[in-house]
Image: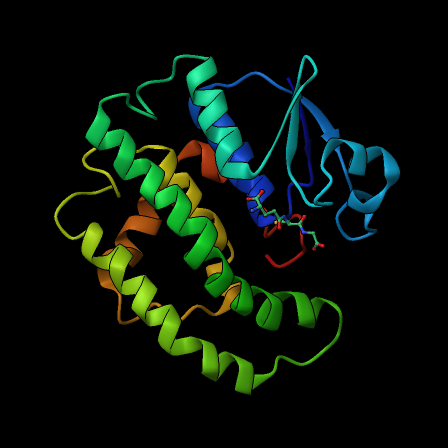
Length: 210
Ligand SMILES: N[C@@H](CCC(=O)N[C@@H](CS)C(=O)NCC(=O)O)C(=O)O
C-alpha cells in the first residue's frame, strides 16, 4: 500500500500516527505540500480533490484520511483499534464524521492564523480568532465531557477516533488553542501525545516550531 503524504499536514499526520498505532505496513510517497505538489497532474489523477493524503493499495485508491484509517484497520483486522461491535463502531464513526465536519474546520482557523500566517511572515487576524472562539469552546466542551469518565473518546482503550480527533489540534501549543477551560480535554490530548505513534510523527520539529 502506497501512502501519498506530507508529514507536516494535519490529515497526513493523522494517517501516519494511525498506521503506526495499528502497525499498518505502507510505502512512502512524499507529495510536497508547501510547493503545491498536490496540484500536479500526476497526483490529481490519484486524488481529484487535490488534497493530502491518499493511498493506492494495488490499484485501489482511497482519499479522505478517516476512510483511509477505517480501510487500514479493517484490511489488517485491527479490531482492537476499530472494534466491530455495533455500538462501539458507530460511536467511532460518529467521532470521525464529527471531526471532519466540525472539529477540523474550527481548529483549522487557529492553525491558519497562528501557525501558517506567521510562517509566511503574515500577522494573525485577531478578529477572525475572536469570532472563531465561541464555536471552538462549544466543540471542545463536547470532547471534554466525552473524556470525563473514561480516558479515551470511546471508552477505556484508544481507537482510531482518538487519533482522528487529536490530529486537527496536533500543534495546539502553536495554534494557541484556548484549552484552559477544558481540563479533561487537556488530560486526554496529553494521553494521546504520550503514545509512541504520536511522538514518532511529530510535525512541530519538521516545521521548525520547536
Ligand atoms: N477531508 C480531507 C481533507 C484533506 C485536506 O484538506 N488536506 C489538506 C492537508 S491537511 C490539503 O491537502 N489541503 C490542500 C490545500 O491546502 O489546498 C481528509 O480528511 O483527507
